[in-house]
Length: 441
Ligand code: SF4
Image 1: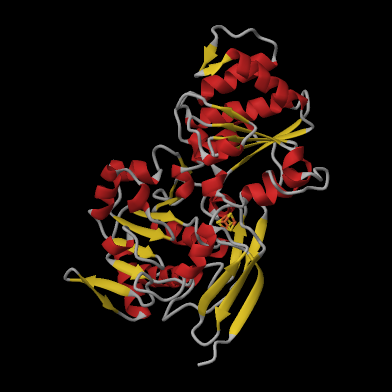
Image 2: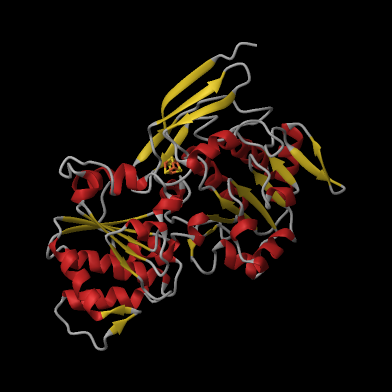
């Protein structure tokens, strides 16, 4: 058979929060398979190839029956899933960060109908950033502004060379900007990280802070900025002389930005770290222009926070058990409700908690029925009672996603989904309808 190729351009990569928008994808029209990806990094490219039919991809709804999976119709799968969900007292609806905003909205509707716990992956990554931003606000901007203007870039607790591979090339280091014509030669890069990461090896300055002592270092920088003499020669493993040198660099740039990652949000002090980083940025604005932006991991976790906040007033860790939304991270966060063994069923959407939650939480997750909306075999899906296979957003269906700087972008469809897959939004819509019908609403 002659291979016929369809090329789709200006495609947005649905992998990390950088949402690169310049991919070109070649699709074999005869087999509806991705055969070539141009401009993507290694991890983004891999996601496109993983959408092709394989033994790791689900393409039909499955129900576990006597320990083995059997293929069923969508009607049967939705009916069984709705039965499980309405017969539980405290279902957990978790994930939502690797799908489109329209599906996230349906997830909120379903959680409210069920009186369940609604959470997204921010509760184990940038939740502390959201708490701090709610407390003190955040001076921030877009990646385009940083590309055109930033001459000082600080990566604090983030390693974009591995986690956001094209961030440096598109926005923060090597790229030429309108006011930074010489790209990397016009920028000074600082990395604050306990490890000598590959990003640290590219940087002009590496501040090797002691693990989990970021809060002390941030406040030492703030004190030095105010002209206070520091006690002791070392703060958080960093020599006083180096802190003074760093403060002088921060003060003397024209336009600076701090990109911070989970190395700051998930170390001791959590949201207080971000609170201190925001205060530092605010104080730096007495001397020059300075901003900060979180390095979001899942490509649409920023969208999940936006959609949940529009519809409930809160961006994650929401409890609907009183029929109205209540918010209390640490009490209604997925890991906490699982550790306390408070949930009695779960619906996992576009996420794999079994791979990254603490073992004790996963053990309790597996004690109760699990329904997953998931395209691939994962540690969570292979332990589920019902698997509902979706088309992958940004590859097999359109949708909206929010970049790490909260700019919404429209995802493109490049090929058809295999088998009987429906979109996440369609699956959640059908679940909402089935639950409404069963509850007589
Ligand atoms: S940097 Fe992120 S968004 Fe860009 S191609 Fe790589 S994985 Fe995709």
